[in-house]
Length: 200
Length: 252
Image 1 (tube, rainbow over the protein chains, first blue to last red):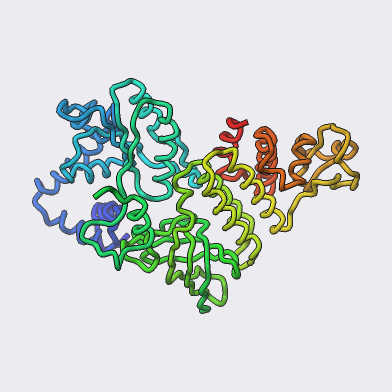
Image 2 (tube, rainbow over the protein chains, first blue to last red):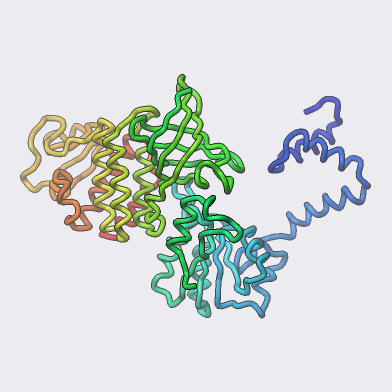
């Protein structure tokens, strides 16, 4: 706390400093920007923060972010509701939707299984996913967990639960990114690409 | 600073910042090493991508001579040797369990080349199996090797208190972690910390070659005993134990 600043300003600097990637100097700069800004501009920011915290909750169906009981994707009747794409977090939905290729619906797990960190299957929304599939009408489940050890473990666990159900389980392809060069690719990426090659 | 170039296996990796990781490596000649891998999570790094448990390959580490600061990992050429563990849940869990126990059992810079070879061999073998029944004998075999290398191998051929042979009679035996081995009927009453062990399971544990042909119930009992023993030694249950023993119970 800087004694040269007022209590309110120090409080604002402290709050900005709690944000990810914001150091003390940037926090100070942002606080002074707010101080100098027009009252409407500064209060609009405060209102936006309040709205986010009060209006946004989890979709009843897929656990994605929603401002009503059901999110926009689940409510969209033009979507392929027979295909569910399983992701770890809402940010993954946004990334996949940016491709413009996805017509399916989603299921957000809210994390991944990590036994060594104490995250068990019960901590995620896996039960809700299984219930959703048991309810019928689902023909394919697309595993879009992160391609790391925890993500793969989570996919394997869900696959083991779905093994005896009449549903096709697929997962996103992995391997060489478009625009890259084989010469500079990591061995693990090349291994994925070699093992996951598809008919030309 | 000492520059070290060796083959290593990653036991644990924790994200340190947006781009860096703190990794715990097991090397054959220098034992366990904790090191920071700066920039490991960047797409193009000197570590072939992010470092995860089971990552295996040639490492270059700068070790502080005073051994009181974190070492710096400067290079990791990952071979992808144990990638098959990522496509099988039972094998992945058994492998993670082995890594957890290995990390907890040794201090840094305490080399155990035999254990390193046994762990690498175990992970290779795990990669060939996809059923818990096949994975369990491999895990039990490694856990016994680990206890042996850590200098706390339990005595399973005779009463650890009085030395009386316990192999005959068909009566249930007792195992005590505090006594570090079996207890005969005459000695068990003197120990409060103990658990029952069937003679058949005891006989199996004394003949490692019999593990692969052992019935699931005996393998489960042996694994439960080892989990109990590791829990007593570590003063807490291993994190993977709960998840693992549940599956072993379902198998038997």
